[in-house]
Every structure is written in structure tokens, then in C-alpha cells.
Image 1 (tube, helix red, strand yellow):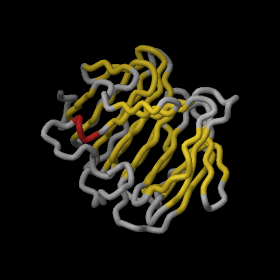
Image 2 (cartoon, helix red, strand yellow; image 1 turned 45 degrees about the vertical axis):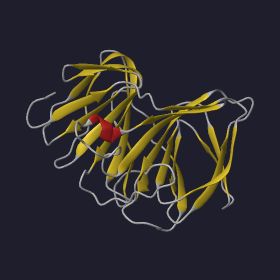
Image 3 (spheres, rainbow, N blue to C red; image 1 turned 60 degrees about the vertical axis):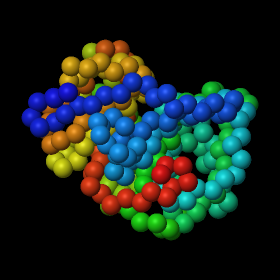
Image 4 (cartoon, rainbow, N blue to C red; image 1 turned 135 degrees about the vertical axis):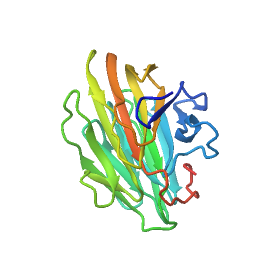
Length: 251
């Protein structure tokens, strides 16, 4: 549907692509599927946004990723990461992790028996080139301010605290019921957003938790209103960025 100017808003209900492995469950969200007649399940460099659940006392054994950037966004709870480089990292609401898998990176994930149940997003970004050097970033995040977008990652050289190797940015926001916020937008770029919790309305649409929208075009003016307390993530994406499609998961 149109939002005014030259922008168009496409929306999608909760994804039905759900993998149940008992204590570890994943729901795959494909941003490219929101745009009619778009042949790619991803949207430019943003391949997949995976809603992941881990019960307390769960181990995902050591495994390798290649040729993808994997971002772990944990709004509550903890995700514990060990890798073959000797890192032992805890990602929580105060930290973000970016695994720049490149030519290959081995890691495992776990929760302890006394950890809370974990619900998080794992974001898969397509790099601009194959077999880049592998590495990991784990940084504290700025304190959230209700009603204001935080800039969490961006392309190398941006002012975000962490980086990925392609032209996509991540923002998050926490809204109280009745708050308004403009969706991040940029000329020549499009914006995919995902409602993690709560309910928001904008552009004549209402989106509940696990539903998503894709704002296409150079228009401005899409304002989201929180109908209930809400947490939303938004990705600014250059749809014309060069991409690779040989990631272990996020092809």
C-alpha cells in the first residue's frame, strides 16, 4: 500500500517457516518475500532474520559458518558463545555480537540450566565478497532511550558500534503505548522492520508481534504508533549492493 510520496509499504504476517528441534527452535523471516514478484527470499544484503528460542540447559555443539555475517541481538536473557579462537562471550541486552564468518569461523552456543528461556534474533547478512578474513565483534551497546532508535550495526566505517561487510544498518527502538516514531529511511535505500514485541500501527496497517513490513522507495513519512508497549527492529538496506549467496545458512 502507498504511504505518501513515492514510498510503498508491504507487510507480512508471522512466518510459517518454523524448525522445531526440541530445546532449540527457529522461525525464519525472509525480507524479500514481502515484495510482490521479488524472486529472492532475501532483500539485497539482508538474507534472513531468524527468531531463535533456546530452553535453559541447551547446547548447540561446535559448528562452522562461512561467507555470512551473523548478528546476535538478545533483548533479554543471555546467549553464551565459545569458539575455536578462545573467546568465551555472553551476549545479552547490553551487548551485541557480530560474527564475520568470511573464510570460516567455528563456534558453539549454549544456555545454562539456571539461565532464563532465551528468545533472540539471529540476523544473516550477505557479504559483498567471498572468503573474507574471519573474525568476531562483541561490544557494549548504548543505553536504550524509550522512543528513540539506537544504531547497532552498519557498514564498515559507519558510526555504529559494530560493523558488517555490506550496505545494511540495524536499529532498534522500545516504545511505550501511545508513542510515535518515524521509520528510519534514506534516499535510494529501503527499510525492512520487524515487530519483536507488542503492536504498532502505521500506513493504514496494524502489525503485531512477529509481523513485519518493507518500506520501498524514496518517500518519507511512515510513522509507527505503538498500540501497546512494543520493541521494533529496523534495517536500512541498499537494495542494489553487490552480494554473495554462499553463506552456510543465510544464502
